[in-house]
Image (cartoon, rainbow, N blue to C red; front, side):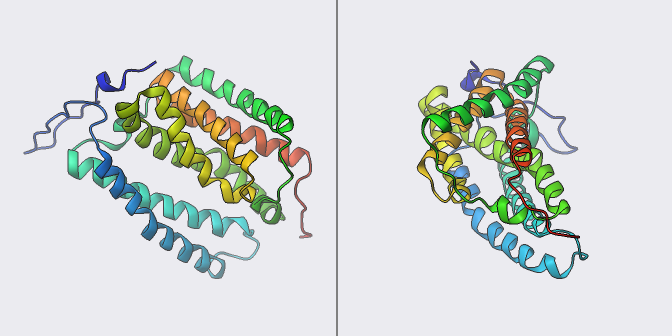
Length: 257
């Protein structure tokens, strides 16, 4: 397990006429920074909604129903992480990626990529045991054309895991670990992660619990490897497994061209 308090903060070459003072401990940010990051979510979300509403009038016909929603969501994420970049860079003079432990060993990444499908299978079995109800999901309505299937598949296996893991396991988890220890922090960080996905499953408590368990697995990958990239890799193959199963089972209906 990684020792958060002793983890070295990666250094960068100082800019001309600039001397960086390395933080005394990792993570070097605090709960006031978390508050600022959360506070930036609302304006970013409003911009995201505006982009979603405008894009159907801009994109060419045949782009698919999912693409405007996904591009709008990505715009919101980009602005939100720009705020986090400013927090890390302006307040502390530290780089973005290495501060959030974006690093990987080949062995750790390979293991996490292979464990993603195993976690997905375990969650599926647990769902059967807990008798998870059939719930309508946004994918059922969105996946009605080939463009939407492609766009949603790409987002679910790349940008989605990247943004979620940077926020929950890259930024939040180290801060909680400093206060309550790594294992407890893994569970606590998984709670807002699970709640975030609640609307996707019509607030079915079983599905929310299952997503929380998956979040704990991603958190354990982050702690065990010391790498947020490894958690992203596990999350990506986890999503890929479920998305592939969804398509194989015919959980979508293609509209005629």
